[in-house]
Image (cartoon, rainbow, N blue to C red; front, side, top):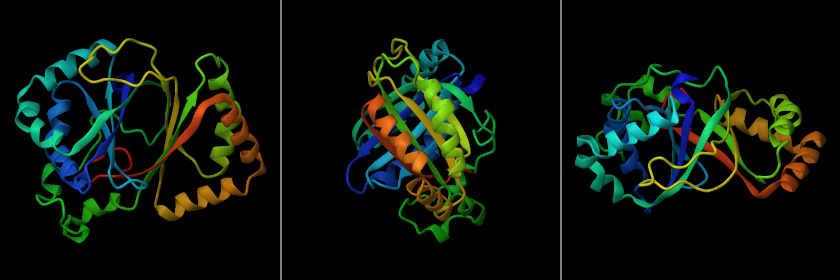
Length: 256
């Protein structure tokens, strides 16, 4: 867990039609640009349920390393050169959660895992998929899915409930967990980037394609056990869960 003892889950709302512009810039400039400061850019995604949503994950070996890495990157040459272009795509970039792992599965990318080279990213983000190199197409159909449960802060038994009752039913429905995370209760040590003050549990899993994901959803819909658990989740959470259905970008590691 050295690379991801601390994790930022960031969800950006973008201006209409600007998501591919940000993804092209991000995959070209902000992957190695951040990792040079000791971060691990684990995954970046298009939200399949919202054309204006960009979701990404970055990990750190510790909270102290997070503060140092973010200070270095956001005061460094790469961000200074490209921040105006990036910020011009963003309507809201404050939807961010500070997490720590409860478990990382085989699908979670290790630090140094291979990713496609920068030249796999089309210069023009509006180019069709068939213009991307053949090996880049392998990630196009993958779905990274999961949920964010807004658990009540005083529910000390939520993790045990999830582990003992929720996980087995999800696994029976085809979920192979890539990662399970909970809120890291710590002060934000880079306040220039706000964090949501919420207590959550998050899980993520990789599905081979849309068909595999739909089979998973159908299995849950037909499961009496899941209906019972879903009712209990609703009771134990402060607001409805956020479902995640994401498509990895060309250079994402998670989902490859």
